[in-house]
Image (cartoon, rainbow, N blue to C red):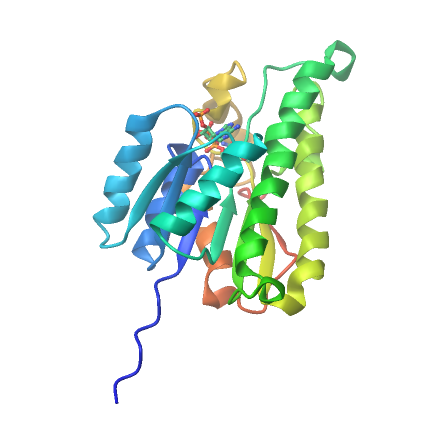
Length: 254
Ligand code: NAP
Protein backbone atom coordinates (compact mmCIF):
# COMPACT_ATOMS: atom_id res chain seq x y z
CA UNK A 1 0.00 0.00 0.00
CA UNK A 2 1.46 3.38 -0.96
CA UNK A 3 1.62 6.12 1.68
CA UNK A 4 -0.37 9.34 1.16
CA UNK A 5 1.84 12.08 -0.25
CA UNK A 6 2.46 14.78 2.40
CA UNK A 7 0.76 18.07 1.57
CA UNK A 8 3.12 20.90 0.55
CA UNK A 9 3.78 23.44 3.28
CA UNK A 10 1.90 26.70 2.75
CA UNK A 11 3.50 30.05 3.59
CA UNK A 12 2.22 33.62 3.75
CA UNK A 13 4.75 36.41 3.29
CA UNK A 14 3.39 39.90 3.97
CA UNK A 15 4.69 42.85 1.97
CA UNK A 16 6.10 40.39 -0.56
CA UNK A 17 5.89 42.52 -3.72
CA UNK A 18 9.43 43.77 -3.36
CA UNK A 19 12.53 43.88 -1.17
CA UNK A 20 13.14 41.33 1.58
CA UNK A 21 9.60 39.93 1.29
CA UNK A 22 9.93 39.19 -2.44
CA UNK A 23 13.32 37.51 -1.96
CA UNK A 24 11.88 35.42 0.88
CA UNK A 25 8.86 34.30 -1.18
CA UNK A 26 11.06 33.12 -4.05
CA UNK A 27 13.64 31.36 -1.84
CA UNK A 28 10.88 29.66 0.17
CA UNK A 29 9.37 28.37 -3.07
CA UNK A 30 12.77 26.97 -4.04
CA UNK A 31 12.77 25.17 -0.68
CA UNK A 32 9.36 23.60 -1.31
CA UNK A 33 6.79 26.04 0.05
CA UNK A 34 3.63 27.08 -1.77
CA UNK A 35 3.45 30.83 -1.21
CA UNK A 36 0.74 33.43 -0.63
CA UNK A 37 2.17 36.77 -1.69
CA UNK A 38 0.60 39.67 0.19
CA UNK A 39 0.97 43.14 -1.21
CA UNK A 40 -0.52 46.56 -0.61
CA UNK A 41 -0.24 48.74 -3.73
CA UNK A 42 1.63 47.28 -6.70
CA UNK A 43 -0.33 44.41 -8.28
CA UNK A 44 2.09 43.96 -11.18
CA UNK A 45 5.08 43.62 -8.85
CA UNK A 46 3.25 41.02 -6.75
CA UNK A 47 2.25 39.11 -9.92
CA UNK A 48 5.89 39.09 -11.02
CA UNK A 49 6.91 37.54 -7.68
CA UNK A 50 4.14 34.94 -8.13
CA UNK A 51 5.58 34.07 -11.56
CA UNK A 52 8.99 33.51 -9.95
CA UNK A 53 7.38 31.25 -7.31
CA UNK A 54 5.61 29.24 -10.02
CA UNK A 55 8.88 28.95 -11.95
CA UNK A 56 10.12 26.92 -8.94
CA UNK A 57 7.26 24.47 -9.54
CA UNK A 58 5.22 25.71 -6.57
CA UNK A 59 1.76 27.23 -6.25
CA UNK A 60 1.42 30.98 -5.75
CA UNK A 61 -1.52 33.12 -4.67
CA UNK A 62 -1.44 36.91 -4.82
CA UNK A 63 -3.50 38.57 -2.07
CA UNK A 64 -3.99 42.30 -1.64
CA UNK A 65 -4.48 43.52 1.94
CA UNK A 66 -3.30 46.22 4.29
CA UNK A 67 -1.97 44.29 7.28
CA UNK A 68 -3.19 46.94 9.73
CA UNK A 69 -6.82 46.60 8.58
CA UNK A 70 -8.54 43.76 10.44
CA UNK A 71 -11.31 43.18 7.87
CA UNK A 72 -8.76 43.02 5.05
CA UNK A 73 -6.54 40.62 7.02
CA UNK A 74 -9.50 38.31 7.75
CA UNK A 75 -10.43 38.35 4.05
CA UNK A 76 -6.82 37.60 3.09
CA UNK A 77 -6.61 34.55 5.36
CA UNK A 78 -9.98 33.31 4.09
CA UNK A 79 -8.70 33.67 0.50
CA UNK A 80 -5.59 31.64 1.41
CA UNK A 81 -7.73 28.93 3.06
CA UNK A 82 -9.76 28.65 -0.14
CA UNK A 83 -6.95 29.11 -2.66
CA UNK A 84 -4.05 27.18 -1.15
CA UNK A 85 -5.18 25.37 2.01
CA UNK A 86 -4.19 25.39 5.67
CA UNK A 87 -1.26 27.65 6.43
CA UNK A 88 1.88 26.30 8.13
CA UNK A 89 4.21 29.29 7.80
CA UNK A 90 3.99 33.07 8.22
CA UNK A 91 6.61 35.74 7.58
CA UNK A 92 5.55 39.05 9.10
CA UNK A 93 7.65 41.19 6.77
CA UNK A 94 5.44 44.19 5.87
CA UNK A 95 6.79 47.28 7.57
CA UNK A 96 7.36 51.00 7.17
CA UNK A 97 9.81 53.66 8.24
CA UNK A 98 9.23 57.39 7.99
CA UNK A 99 11.32 60.46 7.26
CA UNK A 100 13.88 61.38 9.91
CA UNK A 101 12.28 63.15 12.86
CA UNK A 102 13.29 63.55 16.49
CA UNK A 103 10.77 62.49 19.12
CA UNK A 104 10.22 66.14 20.07
CA UNK A 105 9.15 66.73 16.45
CA UNK A 106 6.86 63.68 16.28
CA UNK A 107 3.12 63.48 15.86
CA UNK A 108 0.52 61.04 17.14
CA UNK A 109 -0.58 60.37 13.55
CA UNK A 110 2.95 59.31 12.59
CA UNK A 111 3.38 57.07 15.66
CA UNK A 112 -0.06 55.50 15.19
CA UNK A 113 0.70 54.62 11.56
CA UNK A 114 4.12 53.19 12.48
CA UNK A 115 2.75 51.02 15.30
CA UNK A 116 -0.43 50.05 13.41
CA UNK A 117 1.53 48.60 10.49
CA UNK A 118 4.71 47.34 12.16
CA UNK A 119 3.24 46.03 15.42
CA UNK A 120 -0.55 45.56 15.26
CA UNK A 121 -0.33 44.29 11.65
CA UNK A 122 2.16 41.60 12.70
CA UNK A 123 0.08 40.65 15.75
CA UNK A 124 -3.09 40.41 13.65
CA UNK A 125 -1.46 38.17 11.05
CA UNK A 126 0.10 36.04 13.81
CA UNK A 127 -3.29 35.62 15.47
CA UNK A 128 -4.91 34.42 12.25
CA UNK A 129 -1.96 32.15 11.46
CA UNK A 130 -2.11 30.58 14.95
CA UNK A 131 -5.81 29.84 14.51
CA UNK A 132 -4.75 27.66 11.56
CA UNK A 133 -1.41 26.25 12.78
CA UNK A 134 -1.68 25.68 16.51
CA UNK A 135 -2.59 22.21 17.77
CA UNK A 136 -4.88 24.07 20.20
CA UNK A 137 -6.97 24.92 17.15
CA UNK A 138 -6.69 21.54 15.44
CA UNK A 139 -3.72 22.57 13.31
CA UNK A 140 -0.62 20.55 12.50
CA UNK A 141 1.91 23.10 13.78
CA UNK A 142 3.98 25.66 11.92
CA UNK A 143 6.49 28.47 12.10
CA UNK A 144 6.26 32.25 12.31
CA UNK A 145 9.16 34.57 11.50
CA UNK A 146 8.83 38.23 12.39
CA UNK A 147 11.04 40.71 10.57
CA UNK A 148 12.36 43.01 13.26
CA UNK A 149 15.39 45.27 12.85
CA UNK A 150 18.80 45.95 14.38
CA UNK A 151 17.15 49.29 15.17
CA UNK A 152 15.40 47.59 18.10
CA UNK A 153 18.72 47.43 19.97
CA UNK A 154 20.42 50.49 18.40
CA UNK A 155 17.50 52.90 18.98
CA UNK A 156 17.86 55.00 15.76
CA UNK A 157 18.48 58.25 17.65
CA UNK A 158 17.98 61.37 15.54
CA UNK A 159 16.43 59.34 12.75
CA UNK A 160 13.37 57.33 13.79
CA UNK A 161 13.24 56.28 17.43
CA UNK A 162 9.55 55.48 16.87
CA UNK A 163 10.47 52.88 14.23
CA UNK A 164 13.10 51.39 16.55
CA UNK A 165 10.51 51.22 19.34
CA UNK A 166 8.04 49.45 17.05
CA UNK A 167 10.69 46.83 16.30
CA UNK A 168 11.46 46.58 20.02
CA UNK A 169 7.81 45.65 20.45
CA UNK A 170 8.25 42.98 17.76
CA UNK A 171 11.19 41.51 19.69
CA UNK A 172 9.14 41.25 22.90
CA UNK A 173 6.17 39.90 20.97
CA UNK A 174 8.40 37.23 19.44
CA UNK A 175 9.78 36.08 22.79
CA UNK A 176 6.40 36.03 24.52
CA UNK A 177 4.47 34.40 21.72
CA UNK A 178 7.18 31.78 21.24
CA UNK A 179 6.75 30.70 24.87
CA UNK A 180 2.96 30.89 24.68
CA UNK A 181 2.64 28.46 21.77
CA UNK A 182 5.80 26.35 22.13
CA UNK A 183 3.82 23.32 23.35
CA UNK A 184 1.31 23.69 20.49
CA UNK A 185 3.67 22.88 17.64
CA UNK A 186 4.35 26.47 16.58
CA UNK A 187 7.81 28.07 16.62
CA UNK A 188 8.12 31.86 16.62
CA UNK A 189 11.38 33.65 15.83
CA UNK A 190 12.60 37.01 14.56
CA UNK A 191 15.28 38.13 12.14
CA UNK A 192 16.88 41.51 12.84
CA UNK A 193 18.37 42.82 9.58
CA UNK A 194 20.94 45.60 9.66
CA UNK A 195 21.21 47.97 6.69
CA UNK A 196 19.87 46.23 3.60
CA UNK A 197 19.67 47.58 0.06
CA UNK A 198 15.92 48.01 -0.57
CA UNK A 199 13.46 50.75 -1.47
CA UNK A 200 12.52 51.28 2.18
CA UNK A 201 15.26 53.91 2.52
CA UNK A 202 13.70 56.06 -0.20
CA UNK A 203 10.46 56.11 1.77
CA UNK A 204 12.52 57.37 4.73
CA UNK A 205 13.70 60.23 2.51
CA UNK A 206 17.20 58.82 1.97
CA UNK A 207 17.39 56.52 -1.08
CA UNK A 208 21.18 56.10 -0.77
CA UNK A 209 21.18 55.24 2.97
CA UNK A 210 22.54 51.73 2.33
CA UNK A 211 25.34 53.11 0.14
CA UNK A 212 26.23 55.84 2.64
CA UNK A 213 26.18 53.72 5.81
CA UNK A 214 27.33 50.41 4.33
CA UNK A 215 31.07 51.18 4.70
CA UNK A 216 30.57 51.92 8.43
CA UNK A 217 29.24 48.41 9.10
CA UNK A 218 31.92 46.06 10.57
CA UNK A 219 31.67 43.94 7.40
CA UNK A 220 32.04 47.21 5.44
CA UNK A 221 28.96 46.81 3.28
CA UNK A 222 25.17 46.81 3.36
CA UNK A 223 23.36 43.48 3.26
CA UNK A 224 21.49 42.01 0.30
CA UNK A 225 17.88 40.85 0.37
CA UNK A 226 18.90 37.26 -0.39
CA UNK A 227 21.09 37.24 2.75
CA UNK A 228 18.09 38.16 4.90
CA UNK A 229 15.82 35.71 3.05
CA UNK A 230 18.32 32.92 3.80
CA UNK A 231 18.04 33.53 7.55
CA UNK A 232 14.24 33.79 7.43
CA UNK A 233 13.91 30.55 5.46
CA UNK A 234 16.28 28.75 7.83
CA UNK A 235 14.09 29.75 10.78
CA UNK A 236 10.99 28.59 8.87
CA UNK A 237 12.43 25.20 8.04
CA UNK A 238 13.15 21.91 9.80
CA UNK A 239 16.80 22.90 10.34
CA UNK A 240 15.52 25.22 13.06
CA UNK A 241 13.29 22.56 14.66
CA UNK A 242 14.59 23.33 18.20
CA UNK A 243 14.81 27.11 17.74
CA UNK A 244 12.04 29.29 19.11
CA UNK A 245 12.00 32.75 20.69
CA UNK A 246 15.29 33.58 18.95
CA UNK A 247 16.18 37.09 17.73
CA UNK A 248 18.66 36.44 14.92
CA UNK A 249 20.87 39.42 13.99
CA UNK A 250 21.70 39.47 10.28
CA UNK A 251 23.53 42.75 10.23
CA UNK A 252 27.15 42.31 9.17
CA UNK A 253 28.32 42.75 12.77
CA UNK A 254 26.55 46.07 13.30
P1 NAP B 1 10.37 47.66 1.29
O1 NAP B 1 11.08 47.33 0.03
O2 NAP B 1 9.87 49.04 1.52
O3 NAP B 1 9.17 46.61 1.49
C1 NAP B 1 8.21 46.77 2.48
C2 NAP B 1 6.97 46.10 2.00
O4 NAP B 1 5.95 46.22 3.02
C3 NAP B 1 6.42 46.74 0.73
O5 NAP B 1 6.13 45.72 -0.20
C4 NAP B 1 5.14 47.42 1.22
O6 NAP B 1 4.10 47.45 0.27
C5 NAP B 1 4.74 46.54 2.37
N1 NAP B 1 3.82 47.22 3.26
C6 NAP B 1 3.99 48.40 3.90
N2 NAP B 1 2.89 48.69 4.59
C7 NAP B 1 2.02 47.68 4.38
C8 NAP B 1 0.69 47.41 4.83
N3 NAP B 1 0.03 48.25 5.65
N4 NAP B 1 0.09 46.28 4.42
C9 NAP B 1 0.73 45.41 3.60
N5 NAP B 1 1.97 45.63 3.14
C10 NAP B 1 2.60 46.75 3.53
O7 NAP B 1 11.28 47.35 2.55
P2 NAP B 1 12.21 46.14 3.04
O8 NAP B 1 13.51 46.75 3.34
O9 NAP B 1 12.14 44.97 2.14
O10 NAP B 1 11.49 45.85 4.43
C11 NAP B 1 10.93 44.62 4.79
C12 NAP B 1 11.00 44.51 6.31
O11 NAP B 1 12.37 44.53 6.71
C13 NAP B 1 10.32 45.65 7.06
O12 NAP B 1 9.62 45.13 8.18
C14 NAP B 1 11.49 46.51 7.52
O13 NAP B 1 11.18 47.24 8.68
C15 NAP B 1 12.53 45.45 7.77
N6 NAP B 1 13.91 45.93 7.77
C16 NAP B 1 14.49 46.47 6.66
C17 NAP B 1 15.79 46.92 6.72
C18 NAP B 1 16.50 47.53 5.54
O14 NAP B 1 17.57 48.12 5.72
N7 NAP B 1 15.97 47.44 4.34
C19 NAP B 1 16.52 46.82 7.92
C20 NAP B 1 15.91 46.27 9.03
C21 NAP B 1 14.60 45.82 8.95
P3 NAP B 1 3.83 48.78 -0.62
O15 NAP B 1 4.91 48.75 -1.64
O16 NAP B 1 2.50 48.55 -1.22
O17 NAP B 1 3.91 49.94 0.30
